[in-house]
Amino acid sequence: MPPAGRAAYRIAAGQKEKRMETHILVVEDDAEIREGVAIYLKNQGYTVHGAANGAQGLELAPLRTYVIGGLELCEDTAELTVDGTPVKLTPLEFKILALLMKNPGRVFSAEEIYERVWNERAVSTDTIMVHIRNIREKIEYDPREPKYLKVVWGIGYKIEK
Image (cartoon, rainbow, N blue to C red; front, top):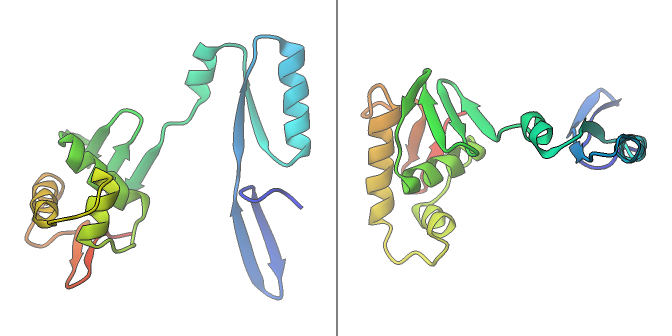
């Protein structure tokens, strides 16, 4: 059985199960060692990519990018585009939006957003409302009728899938 995380489909009794595929990047200048490690990892069920040096490894390493509709957020470059247009966010706005985009459809309370972004206990969540309003102004065509960043009244905020 492949390790957890490897993409695999199993059809049993009419049900389909999907697991994520695990990719491993092996960076090693000695070709024989690199190939030996790759063979071992492939036999363990991993998808292996090889690079002879750090520069090649960086070229092969995927960027952590999240796309929802016209929103594209790249954590590695701290960039956001809306319908292809770059949008500037403050560092806190970026962290809040990244949290929501990594978990589309999941509702986060203002307290939970505060605690995850600031890494401390929430005393007041008024600042979250202000940041959410500012993010909406930057990403929504009509912030009063948001397409992406929604409020779930009495519960919290989410990014629509």
